[in-house]
Amino acid sequence: MANTGSTDAHSPLDGFDEWESDVLKRYPDEGTTHKARDQFRNYAEPPRETVREFYRLNHTLQTFDFVLAKKREFLSLDKKRMSAWEAAEFLNTLVDESDPDTDLSQLQHLLQTSEAIRSDGHPDWFVLAGFLHDLGKVLSLFGEPQWAVVGDTFPVGCRFSERIVYPEFFKHNPDSREPRYQTPTGVYDEGCGLDAVHLSWGHDEYIYHVVREYLPEEALYMLRYHSFYAAHREGAYAHLMNEHDREMFRWVRRFNPYDLYSKSPVPPDVEALRPYYEDLIAKYLPAKLRF
Image 1 (cartoon, helix red, strand yellow):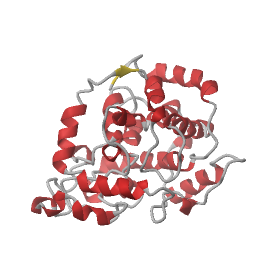
Image 2 (cartoon, helix red, strand yellow; image 1 turned 90 degrees about the vertical axis):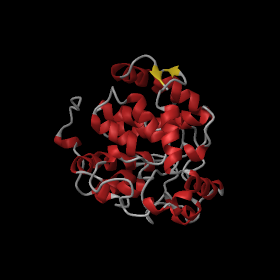
Image 3 (cartoon, rainbow, N blue to C red; image 1 turned 135 degrees about the horizontal axis):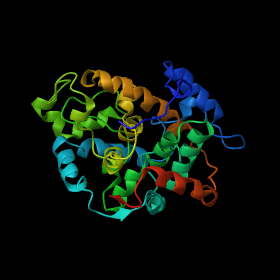
């Protein structure tokens, strides 16, 4: 694993709720529309009807066989070659149908997240993880439907947890009628570790594979599992995790409030920030990435 350069000042807090509340107090910045903690991820009364419809499709169609097929299709990384900044610009036509908290472009959201991390003095690899975390959404621009790209992720090949958002939609998923998937472990072994578990297909797994050779492991966990809310926020699927996962998930939880609470209606100054991020990208990543 690469040297992270982390210090005690930047180690994950044991009290996640304390850290999350602290970040929420500071973001969005003054002058923006400030939302209370319980107003984020409001799936009971989402502002757009597309959110519920998105999850109906996602939970119906994300099956074990579908996930394996998508990994075979996309993890050869032979669709396009572009820089990380070019990929972010490529995303600017996309509005995430699963997200009830923002209508900003994806590049603006990435910069809001990474700038919040940078302003708190975290290591530059942490800032870069903030910038990269949603780049896997380029899958949508390769023709993939959003239900196969965005939204909360969850394991397939075992029983669906009631702690996943909109669990009622899983009754339509064919895997819900497959006996071998109806136990807590399903096709996996208890404590096998998340690297052996197939999560629903989407941008998290994709961007993890795109940059896995270049970033510290802490950053890679942030990228790969930032949408796995059932685990890092609700505590589900702990029986599939090993001790290393549990340790590294402290970093996923450290990242999550920046992803969630930095969202505001005021867009960042993209052109003013671009030189800093192009230099940061060049420090860690090749000029062109394989997508």
